[in-house]
Amino acid sequence: MSTRDTIVAISTPPGAGGLGVVRLSGSDARSVAEGLLRFAGGVEWKPWTAALAELLDEAGNTVDQVVVTYFAAPRSYTAEDVVEIACHGSPVVLRHCVARAMHGGARPAEPGEFTLRAYLNGRIDLPQAEAVHDLIAATTLHQARIAAQQMEGSVSRAIAPLKAQLVELIALLEAGIDFAEDDVSVASSEQILGRIRPISLGLSKLVDSFRFGKLVHDGLTLAVVGRPNVGKSSLFNALLQRDRAIVTDIPGTTRDTVSEIFALEGIPVRLVDTAGIRASVDVVEKLGIERSFQAMADADITIVVIDLAREVEEEDRQLLRRAGGQGLHIVVGNKADLVADVPGDLELLPVSAKTGQGIEELRRRLITLIAPDGFASPQAGLITSVRHELLLKESLESLQRTVNAIDFGLPHEMLLLDCYAALRPLDALTGATTADDILNHIFSTFCIGK
Ligand code: GDP
Image 1 (cartoon, rainbow, N blue to C red):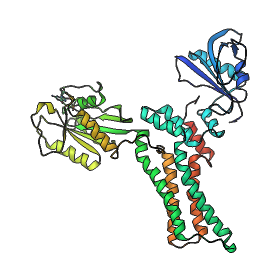
Image 2 (cartoon, rainbow, N blue to C red; image 1 turned 60 degrees about the horizontal axis):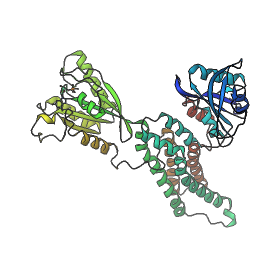
Image 3 (cartoon, rainbow, N blue to C red; image 1 turned 60 degrees about the vertical axis):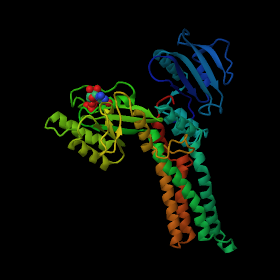
Image 4 (spheres, protein in one colour; image 1 turned 30 degrees about the vertical axis):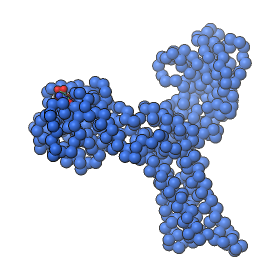
């Protein structure tokens, strides 16, 4: 794959739309575009200015009226010459436009190649490129905000000072070794440890931010479980604030699990409504029960629903025990509208899926469970990528080995090896030393035209 070719792709989603954009990038972008366009006011190529033109077929007939924008290198998305042709969004017209561009010498772009070029041309670093993908994939505004921050370089900005301190430490150790005979004082163990500490602390904080960053990025799964007819589906709908699961009076009708996504403070939550859990001989019902336990095992958080209008039975208690043993959960007493007072022996949140009583409080409790420290405004340097987390941890471990080496009184040459080992993952993270296969892996997850 040559990075010198001029590339072309449809950058808007497939299908018909009001507009569809074909993007060209490379040194021949303008000349290729000239081969398929007729400009209303003659060819001018004023950068960063929209111009009206006609898109032509092979015979010179007009097939669309388009708006053409030229972004001159290096002030463009890819840092190369970019021409964007905004057509009316007919798939045939867009495909024709691409075919004509290819006829004129452009090559179809690989997935993510526009962003790859922006990276290879040094306009953005790797975390910024990865954030482009996240921004496009965002399902909540909160995700988009975090991705936009990362596109601005928040990840690298958070890492840069730590990396600089590490490089300084390496320089100090190197100098101590190189000039040992020239009386350059070798740093003391305390000095070295004193320098490692803030780096480790900074890296740890970033690694910790992944706990929340992962939620923002991947969302979480919430299972709603309870005996048949306690009101799981109704509660599910109350949380979703629209009708999704079918509500009925016949116990055990929600045999399969149903799932929907809703946003809780910008975190996408996949809500799984499970079949009624009941000690039953009914085969289908039994399958449902197994699914419920499975859903609980797979869920990040479980909501156990108890029917306040009925006696608490052994099954309820079994369910509570199971949830308690499995981690984060909230116990909800539903149908609070039917009872005068709530039994005191169970610690539960009274709600009514019917009247909406307690639903807001339930949302609040969920938020507290998810983010005990509160939802700060998007933090600077929030880590949302598994790749970043792994590399940060790797760096942190190498630093820890450095500390151990000092404790063992090992020579500075040995410490240096660990320091370099701590530096490498940081380089890989921000893209300074990234192998091709990693690049391929990252950019192949993009779609074509991005
Ligand atoms: P599931 O089997 O646990 O999913 O229960 P459903 O959501 O299908 O509800 C079973 C029955 O209880 C339906 O008739 C609902 O209308 C009713 N129901 C659900 N929640 C409430 C509530 O808070 N108050 C009252 N009075 N009825 C409810």
